[in-house]
Picture 1 (cartoon, rainbow, N blue to C red):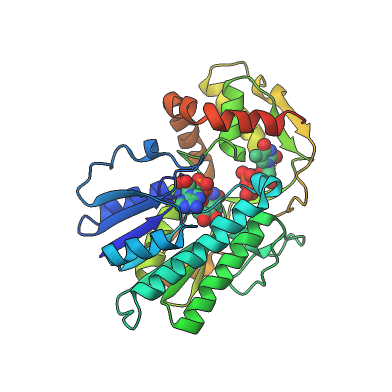
Picture 2: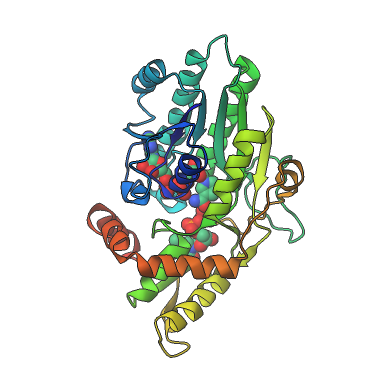
Length: 350
Ligand code: NAD
Ligand code: TYD
């Protein structure tokens, strides 16, 4: 099995690459990543010398480059994670989301289709997507199922929805053996500190304001990243061609409750008097078009593929905080340079 994983230097991708490189020594794993601000080879130093691992620097918006590497390496499978992934960035710069998430995905579909023309036996194209394509839930009893209609509300989720549609269309039209999953919010080690949980950990540590959008009442379902990687393993190997699997932790939290919990954990870990970090909480202007609630019904993958989350949220959050506190160099690295200037620019007016 020659397996191409795209976006393997990013947050979730690096956990997927690690799992596959270590669990399947008989596979050749190729990690294709453009190393944008979100891609970091320091996420993979522990496996970078493994004999079954190869890193390829490349951009999925470059169709010719993709055709060439498929022709040269004849991949048997693709797990596609490369994407622009941050909603706030999609509001500032939607076109980069169209380019990577839509055009890049179609380029990859074309490269696989051409490479596998006429012989898709044993081949698989797995597209990793998000629950955000379903839009925002307003009735507290509702959950996203695999049958829920798409209703994306942000440029990010619209670009992911478009990519999902193209993947299904290639499955239907060209009989490409596709499989998809839509997962809820991930958290854990290597999470880039522009997203809620790692940003709060970083700002608590450095005594900076904790920017809570709006009233902090938006709800997300959170899953430990290693559990998402385990689910991706299950879907890739045992999911049915043409099917979609929703992945989530049945673990809904209001943003403000997570921020308060993180403040408590950090006060304890940093040996600060109780209540110190919570004083940093600052309510800021809400995100434009902010989705109120996401909640995943993960029964299908649990029943059909036997997957279930391995960690409770509080335990996962402790592990995450411990990882960030023990990996200061990683944090310093990703909060310097280009990222730092973006970060300062973005929050300057809040
Ligand atoms: P990330 O932003 O941390 O990583 C994305 C990776 O893709 C980076 O390594 C980046 O360098 C690479 N990349 C970006 N543009 C590229 C291009 N044009 N060509 C090649 N590589 C490129 O993202 P993540 O949080 O790890 O998310 C991975 C995937 O999972 C995405 O498709 C995302 O939509 C999906 N997802 C994420 C979450 C979440 O909570 N983070 C939840 C569900 C689904
Ligand atoms: P985020 O981690 O960006 O993920 P997503 O928007 O894809 O769900 O944000 C999670 C939630 O936290 C979302 O409701 C927006 C909110 N949020 C804040 O309140 N403050 C912040 O600084 C960030 C980054 C997010």
